[in-house]
Amino acid sequence: MKLTSLQMATFVAKGYLRFDGVVPEDLNQRLLERFSAIDPSQSRHLGDYYRKAMAERVLPVCDSGVPLADLFQHSPDFQALLDIPAISGAIQSLLGEGPIFDHHFLHVTIPPSERRRMGMPDTAQHYHQDSTIDPAMAFDIQLFYFPQEVTEPMGGTRFLPGSHLRVVSEAAISRYQNIVGQQHVVCPAGTVLIFHKGLWHGGGLNRSDQTRFLYKIRLAPGGSQVRQWNADDLTPADAKQRATFWQDNTAASAIQETLMRPEPWFEFDTGRLELINRVRLWRYLLGDASADVDYWLTRLERPQISEVG
Image (cartoon, helix red, strand yellow):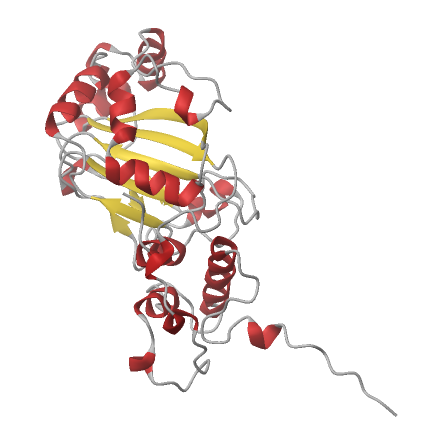
């Protein structure tokens, strides 16, 4: 079940896609039972918990750089998660053939009583990118899988839509606490979000009486990312060049509108740079160096006219 062009444009613009309740409940329960095998209440601190969880192989041990197709041959539940049609189709659409495993991790967010026992402060995780300083156009993706229902008090991951193309140095953005337009994950069990590698995010503060689990897996492209989705729905209207500013908005295609829709946190002028970066990423995925939306890149690439005489 490959992505549509509009879904790809949404990923380009916002940096994520969301699939609510896509994982069957029986698989959620099997994975949640596995994730819960080590009880945080029996650990002195989170480092102690993770040491035990790794020793007990709560997650299968996988080497980085392994083809995804070879990764979970002996871990059928993890393979079943990736084989869900909506998920496998999204992975293929975004990464192409032969995706590569980068790493995976089980994030465990404990309730207030456990934080107090461990002497931990009541603070959410800081905003960060997972890709250090990486200006490459080719991108990894990260799957965020929530095996249980996440309520607002459980402090689901917060993230900033549209932040993925602003190059920063990983945790240099940690000084930002709350940004207009940010979202917090509240979702049914079995929800999967797929993030662009650069999307700003951080774990929320768990105020409930339940331990919250998040399984994350990062994947890299093993080949071309050009037109790997179902692009049959692209039409000439999606490539039509409107005027940059004074325009008839009713003439825009859904893809153009999606690519040009600003986020609430965009600054009035410099937010335009985000639009330009979206077009550059859209060009990369289309494999068309002349593709544009609303003339943003074309006007910057006009040939220079030399003075004569």
